[in-house]
Length: 306
Image: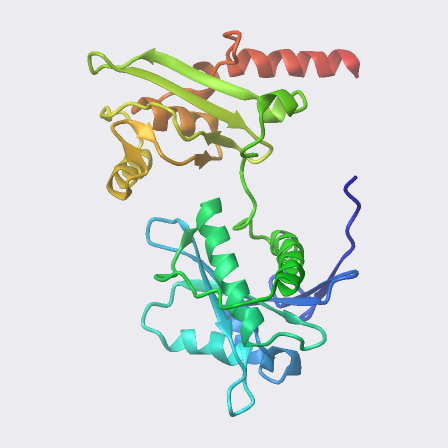
C-alpha cells in the first residue's frame, strides 16, 4: 500500500516566484529551487557549497521544455554545487530560467555517489522523454557496490517526487509501460484508451493510432501509424513537430517510434491525421463512441448523480 508523503516547502524570499527549499520527512536529501535571477542571493549558504546534482530548466526557440543535468564536486576553494551552476551563467548559450540543486542534509555525497546519480538521472530523463535533454554525452556511472546502489536508487525515487512537487515532470512517465492489460484496473474516464482508424490518402496505407487520455492530456502511443503528409490546413506548430519527428527518427514511414504528449485532443488528432482536426469528434473509444459523446454522457451522468 502506498503511504502519504510529507513535503516541507520553505519560501525563502516569502514569494512563490522566489527561492524554495524543499525537504521530505525521513529523507536525507535537500533540494533548492532557485530562479536564474536569484542565484547570487544564495552564495553564502553552506549546504550549497557541498557536492551534489543540479538540473537546469528552460525552453528553446521551438518552445520545447529542456533540461540539463550535471554534477558538482567540492573545489579547492571550498566551493561546490552553487559555484558550478554559476559557471553556466558565463556560457554564451543562456538557455535556462531556473535551477534545482540537489544535495544532502548530512553532507554524505562524494564523487562516487554524484557520478552514479548524474548517470541515472540523465538516462531517466532520456527514457521518460518529456523534456529535451541537453546533455551531449552519457555520464560515466562509476563503480558503486550493490549495497550503495540500493541506497542511491531509494534517494532517486524520493528525488523524482521532490522535483515533481517543485514543478517539473522530467522523470515522471506520462503513461504506464510494460504492464499487461489483463492486470490493469478498469481505466477511469480521464485515463481511457482512444483510437483513430481510417484509410490514408496514400494508397495502400491505413492510419491507425492509439491514444491514452490521462489526467494531464493526451498521449499518442508508440507504434501508431499516422499520416505521412500534411494538408495546408494543418497548424504550423503541428507540421513542424511532425517534420522534426521525421528528422530525429521518431517517425519512420509514418510509424511512431516514441510516444507524443499533447494538452488538447485536437492537437493530438491533427498530429495523427496531418490536417486540422477536431479531437472530440475524431478520437473514439473501442466501441466507436466519440470522445465528445463520451464526455457529454459523463457530464449528464454526473448531473443526475448530483
